[in-house]
Length: 337
Image: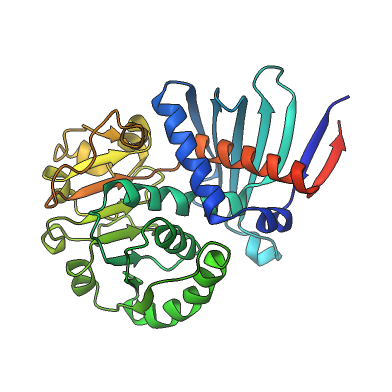
């Protein structure tokens, strides 16, 4: 008989914090850089092209003693049936025995770990004197990205929020996002920066030291000529072939970093400029920068790009941290298989 912990969305929201997610994602990057982790081939299947699909990301983290996977299913017609369009489920297994250890709602895990990932890129690659941050994208990930960035970059004084495709909606989105950021930071120092809407995208880009992008764009909206020397950009929107948020021309001169080179070149922000021949394909993985094995920013004038495609190791490390927290607090349910 095998016991497994089940954590639903409510339990995860009670347990998971920005600091916990940041620590887990950094650990995942470090394990990967040491060679003590592996990503396995992604699976993508369309049940009905453009209407229903699924993807599976999986891998192992030897240092933590787990392997795992996340299944994300999208069925576009579900809202008309009173159901969510998106379902995400994570499974965690013991690496030495293969025993299932946890079943988790992957939705909140994805939100927290994606926010942490983008912010970690800024932590290690932005200028130490960076004071202004632009959040380009006002969807569900925006509060998590802003909160994680403010947690890791205490020098930030102003956050601009913009909807790059519907700038007239930026003010309303900013008003909705601000209390969510405050809630996420309530247990870790609180919000220390002003948050303001920025309906003029070009002006906001030109005046920002750090830019976070999180949209489903397939046409770049950050133009190369707008980006000033010394700017850092963390791109989290591109997670499948054809998506692009940043002008390809910027890749010709920027220093480019990523979470996984192969994934960045096949489905990440790097894909389009790489296939167009604008970008050489040279990517420094962020784990090497964190460990000190690789150089990050070497000059205040460097333009740095972090292509955060989202890797299974982030989900596994966060799930492992949640399993430990659940065992310590008695949260969740234990089922016998």
